[in-house]
Length: 111
Length: 118
Image (cartoon, rainbow over the protein chains, first blue to last red):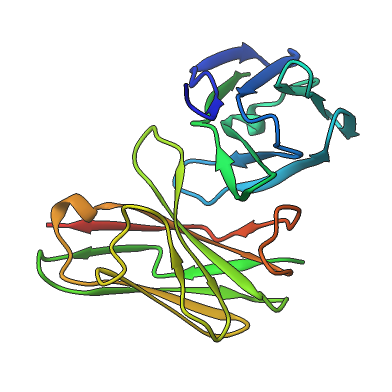
């Protein structure tokens, strides 16, 4: 089992839809959870950073962490065509000092 | 704030040549810089971690003599792909962090360099 699993998609939604992106992980020591957005042929851009379990909201974006289920989510409300990108989850913690990335989910928001 | 640049953004070279990629933190001092490689439809794979003024720490399976990393200052790290081969063609991305690269440090990524080896 890979340390971080993420459905690569692609995921296509109409403009205005609520998008749910998810990752599961196997290492219970992970404590820091991030979501990055990566546009085609660009470097990842940090969207959300959360520590341990709970929710964090920033504008149209909400990150959720459920450590008991080893499951993290990113919700995008009122999705826009400009949200079309690949979304990568990443996490670290315990003896794993480096960031471990998911494969990324490619999202397409259609006008 | 926290802007990281990379140069060049794209490079095409012949097999057997060496290519140098620069990574700069523009508005902060990066104690630690990371180099990643990303193949199409794959996730970012960490190649090495470098701290300013010390030798880089390479991940398992990454040849340190092939991928030379220099972190000479708090704002500049370079990755040199020596004797490049077609299988080295990939998207190389650097990131930088303010702190010591610990598990809670945020990494800020550069825009990436696409290397194509003919």
